[in-house]
Length: 422
Ligand SMILES: *Cc1c(COP(=O)(O)O)cnc(C)c1O
Image (cartoon, rainbow, N blue to C red):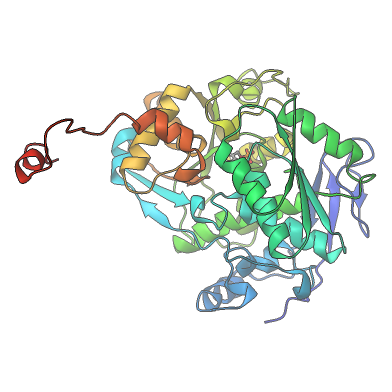
């Protein structure tokens, strides 16, 4: 299978419209956020479907990856020698009747990006960003992170024998995620400040410090994350649900969802454009507020506060891209409380799939949109489960730590168990 089709692509600034090709930079000179734009004109949707179908049977080939399967739509310019893989993507899609009943709609399918090698959807994008850095000959990879990004960065850096540096807030981060990051060998620097401060620091100093910065504004992260919707579409035989619910923090994932849908739609590969339901946590919902108030600029939230730590972001860098995704799909935004998130998490956990708190915002959001009449009971939805149930062990302890029976002085006997059979 050839991967050398060097289709035209360039970085385009979403602020001033400048086009950049031939060299790499993280942001536009004007400070604007960059997007990778590609010429899809030579591609044939039906041919791609057949190609992606054939690759489902591959083993031990880079195109067996649930990201690189779609290389033609992600980064055909990367040389195969730079393409690394840990078998990311290839995640399950599960119809969940309890979730559908809970939200009050006909059908919900859970897309378990939690099944990625480092336990979150961040792998879908990170594998492409790190591969791109490798293609440039870079050897220190860096990010600012609320946890899952850093774990993914550290995993891929270790996997390809390179170093990683992680800047993380001193508080409000799941210890499991930070320890996972250190376990893969990253140098972690905690500091008194927010995720947003860390991003600003890396953008300002990354080049001078010789770092290849893999924050979510890195356009290759977005290109890689498009694979989530490609795989979802393929699993559904290219027939889309009415809605796709997705949690929003830095808003990279919803941006990728919109961009990936745009690709599939323009290539005629899907039967319709599903509507995006972007769900934020009430305590960290600057984007939802902006959309609701019809404002033209995002007003950052200086002190975001939600138990769903993966969404605890007050100044989402990708808000312009997220807005494009909503426009394309007649999408909506909604915010849910931490209590609503935890109630939905109970449902998803008890269904046998499970997820970390941020992911449960999807089902909570679908329920709220149904209750508000935005979603019809006869409609169908997919929910992107972004992180693994074991990513936030504190949440498990808080929610379930007390929910067991203690026999106390009573001896273990058939009788004592029979009395308590579920
Ligand atoms: C990163 C992350 C999010 C938020 O995604 P964004 O692209 O930052 O909007 C949601 N859930 C989990 C588990 C995450 O790791």
